[in-house]
Image (tube, rainbow, N blue to C red):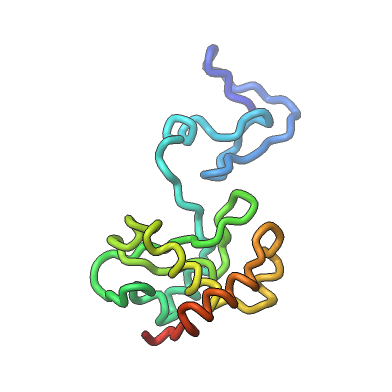
Length: 153
């Protein structure tokens, strides 16, 4: 179904329908975003975390406080630390809980976030994403610099 905006009518044709890369709404094959996302394209949209992963993170004590400052109070943002193939990776070891103040100044804490994320990942996890960046070697370098990350800090 196509919606003709000029004539305000719906046209039914057999076409392949894609979904918007930000909100999963149906769009035409030649489009990338739906109208709503195209108008708001300057606004950053966080990639949705699957419900099963949200439940796992809600039950994990690691996600109850900021992993850098250790602050329990205030709003915690979930930071997707690993971007692979232009998309934020939705795996538990890639998503870090950060205090709002830390998240707003993420460039200052980027290496620490990488250290925490890579310390939480297994070598098997990192092999899937180690194409252009050797995350296994980066993990070893950061562990020698900062030590082994202790979740109970």
